[in-house]
Image (cartoon, each protein chain N blue to C red):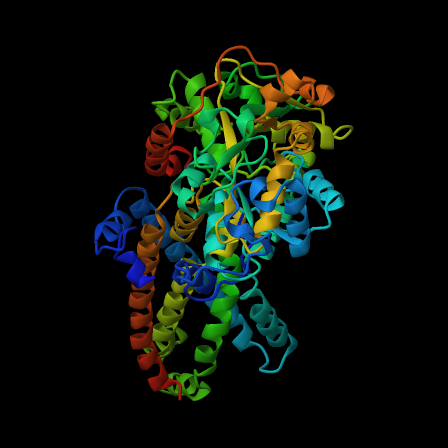
Length: 383
Length: 254
């Protein structure tokens, strides 16, 4: 989901062997469709589109526990409370969760699925940025969770191949002991923030940083259709000496290297909690520049554990799963239905930032146009 | 990779990838990569050659030589994440040296966060270029026979004449060959830069990483392969020149 510096082997061999190998192996060979899916009542789990195909929820649990393992990928433990989501799932069901490459990007999830296709190490489920999910929807298995109807139509694929999971707003996290509280995006250009403002990742690469540029665009007179003012904002930030080209991590925040971090409100809010007593980490969502985005869940069509993958989805979209995300400051997609039913975790819900006004979510076309603009101009803007 | 560089996403033949690879931001990435490689190759070659010279003037089995050669053997391979971390711990924002100087009123980051940009890469790359130069250049210096110097002296030549007429010409191919090797070494290095630079992907290997893994720019894997192909071409040219120079060198150093 987000992207940290590469973890590849520390080699400086001629030709960057690792690099070329990755490129060369990009195309995984086609393989026969697996028939290894566990069967329940004559129905292959790999083609089940709802719990009804398992003869009910208990049938699904039985089939999933027979498989015994679930492969997840790119789920950082400190991201929307995933550590607790995974441990709760393991405690509830007799299934072991194998969490690979927690810091990988969305595209790397897809790459891993291609490269590991046909092995039992391939990822069963994905948690993807919306652009990557849309581009790869053909490789997902259609499956509708029991709470499918609670999710608004524009947040799910009509065939059930993908469904939004949790959302957030772009925010500015800051160390209140080190810098004054910013009230708008443009505040960050002031001399108070010299050498202090970091963006979570490279926006030509990571979804969070991309949304950060979109936020800067809205705060600097641009719009979802025109993010050039966002790039211009970072150019000025760099020229003012305020931009810090460091990838912020919990460690850089704790050590005080990155006193201001532009990131999703749920990751920033999680930092406030983790660093309580160490850093006075505050989060502000600039009201003039509300950018929101949902991440997307999908099941790998070639999942080595098809029943476990489907049970994981049922778990995530149950009240328990949704409230666990909420506890990690993610805005669960069933928010409205759960508020109405009174099943939402009120204490956690009250901690979400209050916003007035409509948040902007970039459409597929706007995202593509913005990505092209960033590809051409980002490196020059900040160098 | 080469095949991927010449097809589009649907598998049809195209030169669009290659044309994109030599234009716009990718062309500037190539230009920065070449600059970085050239600067670190020249600096590494000069400093490495001086160090190697200091070593050969010492005793052949003395401690200086033993320490320098074994240290070079280790440090020349000391690239990657560990090296980047070592530099951040030393001259990063909260690094040992940074803090030491700051307490004495010197702010090495007054001009900006250069350690995370191209100047930082030059510094860090030089750290593995110098030892590599020592390793590859020492045999050439060892090949200088004392008899040549004595002969030059007997014929009435000064030290300057000896260097200009004898040692210089003998060593030049080895020196420039080693420099080319250093150039290719820096050009293809990836992990060090990946661990150090997180914004803007200034050099080609980082651009390729971007194109392979980006969750924003999609469907550009083949453009990444075209960039990889471009790198292979550059390295092939450099290695071709190296082979030519190497042939001249070995003539004298048998």
